[in-house]
Image 1 (cartoon, rainbow, N blue to C red):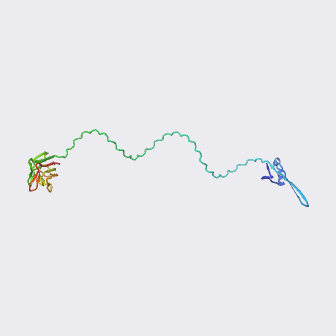
Image 2: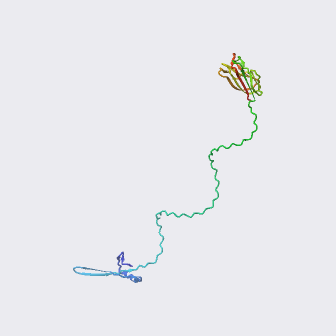
Image 3: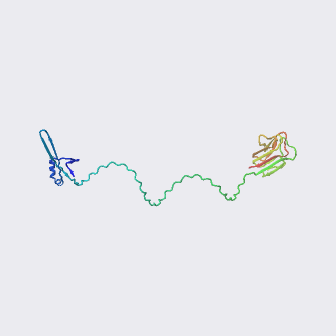
Length: 272
């Protein structure tokens, strides 16, 4: 119920003109409910007294819902709310089916060479190969000769001054490059070419000897020895003129003494 004479719990008095207007409304006639209020006041004084009273109409009527109005326009969007917390993890999805294999990719480029591997063990020996064809004949030694002097006595074996030693024996001879007949002081070279010479003389006390080829000593000074050991020397000479005589000569004016037994050897090899 709603009382027009009441606002916020207090009576709200209308004037008579408003009351008369409302009484003419059919809706009011059907639903109104009147109320009255009275007030009195008195006062007294020494000479007079008066009293007054008044009444007013309370308009009360039921609130009947009205027709729903049209929907208002959409209001402006509100400010964004605070970001919510992370939601709970979703359930695992269903495992997908197996796809068909893709086509092979292009072949990749060649990689860098790997490090050399460890050396393998020694393999088993291979089968023996067949015999090769004979090789050409080598230069080798085509001719050779060896002569020596032997004294059968028990004392010394003197060699006169400015004289060659006489070779008493031929030890061996190969080829045709040499000529020798014992006893002789000379071995003759019959062919040009390179020759190897080996000389050995066992002398007593001081002595000098020259190896003479073609009439000339092969060294600028004689081969010397003091008797403490043999005089020994080797040479390689190119013989360009033949025949060439080979001798071992005592260049001194005085005789020199050799040991007894085999005291002188001369070996010559033709190299080429």
